[in-house]
Amino acid sequence: MINLLKNILNNTNSQEDNDSNKNLELLCGLMIEAAYTDGKIDNIELNKIKISLINIFTEDPKEVNLVLEKALKNKNNSKSLHYYTSFINKNFEKDKKLLLIEALWEIVLSDGEIHDFESSLIRRLAGLLYITDIESGNARKRAIDKNHN
Image 1 (tube, rainbow, N blue to C red):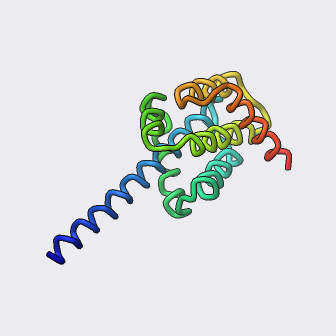
Image 2: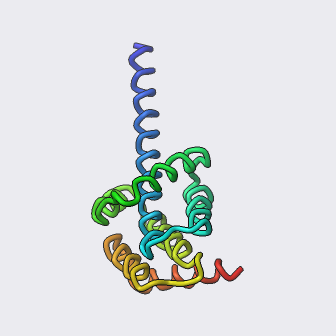
């Protein structure tokens, strides 16, 4: 009986770890996708991705480095937006989705310019995540304010 309970608890922890890794992989993949929309990813954008994943989404720094490295290698094999957004819609509350949109704005703003492709990507993502244009615009304003500080 004790072994059965241990197995159940271990499987629960293992499932939580898998979900956490999946969250990190998807967030990282989506952030890389946003950063690479203009055809290049610079160190400023990479640092902004790391900071966002660690500080906003409270991910483990070592895991972030590993997953980010993997995502960079696979950036040309990106998934569809539906792949990312369907998982996020099932697993994230609205507040966390708003934080994601704000983080994506910070990433695309970090190189000092917004390309049409970048703003179009975030607009499509916001729609797929059921974030209104007003909410996305407010997230953009907060991101601009953060980048100016």
